[in-house]
Image (cartoon, rainbow, N blue to C red; front, top):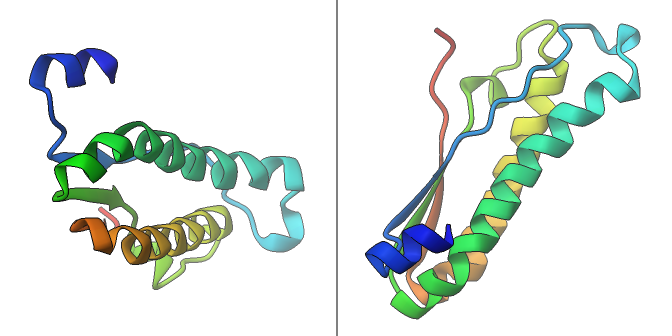
Length: 116
């Protein structure tokens, strides 16, 4: 990130897309150790990348944060328990960012394409 900022001297947009493998299981069959990585790593990726660009974006007073989710966050499918929870958690994280950063004219949005 430091090399990018020193070369371009600005960040116009953060496009965050993390997709961690997860167990395709019903809730009754899944263990916490199978559930935790999907939830933790995807939110961690959004958190770390956002923290890296935010100081510069605040100084610029107008930028965009875009995070990829999935239609599964609004219409869950059988066996996608881990994915649904991970994406819903991330979407609320992004909503809070949008509220907090609006004062800096920074938008935070989620794109949720459907399954292919």
